[in-house]
Length: 417
Ligand SMILES: Cc1ncc(COP(=O)(O)O)c(C=O)c1O
Picture (cartoon, rainbow, N blue to C red):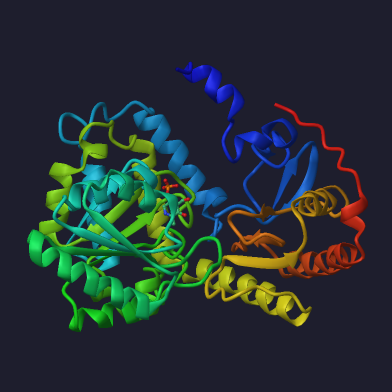
């Protein structure tokens, strides 16, 4: 028999095993100062490409004022309790109505956090008779939702529509016996690679198979589509998405999230989602702050236009400079290089310390062995100068990488807590 604490002393987990060397620099870095294109990292100003502040709302003067006024008026305590018991308010209901209107759905339920909301929505929607069919690159919150689902779940390789059909056939055979239903879950924008879920093709399959479609559009809400209503709007299939999930944590630069759908589904979720029934409601300043952000998101298309001006310049500039950015069809901009994990760490350190550029790095097992993915998130507050400076620095680090410079260098980053 093992003592739990002794066991975790020896096995720190896939990320935790690197904590000693990485903490404070590669993991848990501290970005300080106003949220913008440039922030302070370790006492020095850096150009930051790591924040999902797509529309630049985090530090918008109207947003900052609304947040401050709401905190002053309500404090952070109100409302007390879960929505169902004692934590409902006019403002919560107003935000739900406005989101429904924007998303062109009958109703909406607010979520305290997107992640736990997604887990809980899956948990409450399907039972042991039902089958969930999902994309292999689904976000951790979908995977964790499936971990609590006691029925079957079938995965299809990322965006592979022929495999999705096969899994739908398999699911149909199964639910004939169980008398259950089928829920397909995919994403609007896949947050690592930036490519879109093939929503139009999935919706088209509804003419052949009977299923409901649940879309996690965390990165698409506010950034994609003519009005910013997301990836389904961009693909012209809003009506075909039965349940739409968005988070406030990205384009809205806040905390919380929502699920929109028809009255039947949302009222069911309202009375069955354990994460909302058994947890305190979103604090009032977050709700009032979300109302202000939604108003700006809807009334100021120039925010989205600025975002896309930077996205297009960055992605075109990188491609013209010979970089591989994969199949992105969204603001998420991956840059793929070849190298080892030690090379990746030296390269990131060089980017930060020599060129004052802060971006995220993704390595094996998220991407295949030998691939280094630098992930850039352009925002409306970046400038075209930021773009050209970054591309010129990326050319230099790519030359260094090809010349083997990062293989030789000894990394000297002191971990700080
Ligand atoms: C695809 C996707 N779904 C869900 C979430 C969770 O959202 P939240 O940060 O609101 O918990 C995220 C955020 O990282 C995400 O990228």
